[in-house]
Length: 102
Image (cartoon, one colour):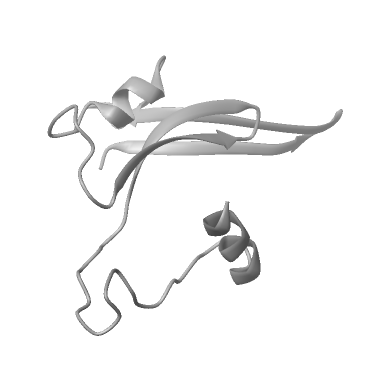
């Protein structure tokens, strides 16, 4: 992908937590993306949500972005529904179980 996310965590005056989304240009230059939410959702196949797909608002630094979250799902005959392992990165497993319970 030609997209790059640049995060500035700290500057000389303190914490900034700013996030910028850039696209790699033809000459190797980074060009700012003015509306990353519409860019992230532009590759959707249709306007109807399919199984395993959801639209969410993610907060990166001080900027909120609309993103599509996809999960691999498969019917499991033994458990009578969708079962399997849940693996996360970035949050604890107990926090994931709390989010899923709500």
